[in-house]
Length: 300
Image (cartoon, rainbow, N blue to C red; front, side):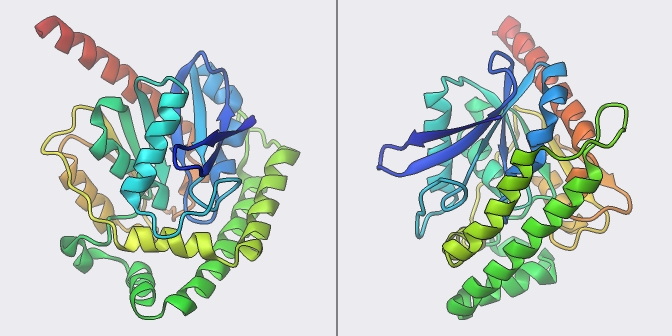
């Protein structure tokens, strides 16, 4: 695991982690609300076994990335494009959990030629779209109302939510990390430290980065492609209160040929128990993209 810093064209800093052998096929993983990139850091062996490596960038204010007040999904998509260009990535798979799934959608929809596959794990919807208002869970309806009507209070609320998420991740990681045989492995010290730092960052930044992210999510409006050339996989926890079955059904309808997996008895943190299965399907999607590309080139 290696942390890197990229100086963006506008002078801001983008921090990101590289996990695995960079000669392998790349996956860009976008963390959820509350700084959750560390959940994939224990997966280096599994990534290597599949000839994959992971790039995990931090959104503005997370990790060592600069704050960026008032940014939106498309601003961050441009940041990701700069990162991809700096790493000389012509095409890659992109995966996002929770709010990270929404940012992954924004990038894939805007730069489809860069995408080998799109994986959405308990993904948030573009809340700014009028047609999603009726299917939003009560949790996101409350967040949206707070952002619009009580921004000062919503910043404080975001701090509390993020601390809860970071601590829950830390606790769950200590219970769920296992090797390919299912034997538990204690989380590496650097993973524990990163999760501790996530909690500290919330206090240090006074929730500004969290408010900025929620503002971007609540104002999000996306245009979906009539047909996606790249494979799309949607993962949904049956008991997820933040991203409900109605949300995944909406995404399945927008990405016409998407595969939807409903995980019984699991909630928003089901990614912790299903990371290996998700990697298996992600690898399969990349292979399918390769076969489609070869078939298309023969037709052309």
